[in-house]
Amino acid sequence: MSKFFQALERAAEDQALRRHAPPSVPASAEAPAIAAVVPYRKPQGSLELPREATNGLEEHLVSLVAPTSFAAEEYRALRHLIEQLHKSAKLSVIAVSSPGVADGKTTTAINLAGALAQAPDARVLLVDADLRGSAVAGRVGLDDRAAPGLVDAILNANLALGTVAQVRPHLNLSVLPAGRLSSAPYETLKSPRLGELLAEARRRYDYIVLDTPPLVSFPDCRVIGKWVDGVLIVVTAHRTPRKLFEEALNVTEAAKIVGLVFNGDDRHVSRGSYASYVSRRS
Image (cartoon, rainbow, N blue to C red; front, side, top):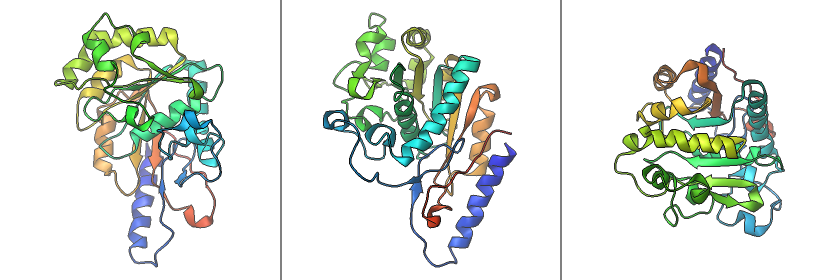
């Protein structure tokens, strides 16, 4: 991970320098460092999808609302990595997590699922497995409590996956919301029933993307880990402490870490273009 630690250190140094420099153009980012850093900007121009397909979607879910935008292209770079691992290592179930809260894991999970769904023959399921802070449904324009979801299917074995996954046909994407509130998230996710549902998902879909709880704060993701093929860890420049990131690596099975998603690196914004920044595992 030496290259990634160097990236974090450079970001911290840049932040310190900016405290004593004239104000620069503000920006934030939401993109995979495995492929490139994408300054987080409102997509320009008209949307490429029918209005009914984008109603209720947040504008920074670029893979869904502006799939031909340059920002969405960066998520396609992450999609390319997952597709290659799908072919070479049979990777199908991908968990997206982060060391702590507010690192952008949910946005990354949704955009990755949206990028994968751009392939017309791909069958993609987006699962909200963050039972402590479920947010996927609302961000893709669904009502999390209007219909049964993941928690309901875990607690009721009579609910098959096909009855709880909600299809967004214009997006070529299925979404499994968290569903009802769980009073014991860890115990719910520890149930063998979750493994049964994900096994069914493997048969029905090519890719299953899970938005999971933060790695360090809760043990939930470690329980989910045994059911997934790979884990993407999302961190944020100027925000994620190195110690917290190291702890996240320590509680994650090293062989399952697919890569690292580096958000919020605004060092290239002043160049007036989207600039690539590679950070692979080493």
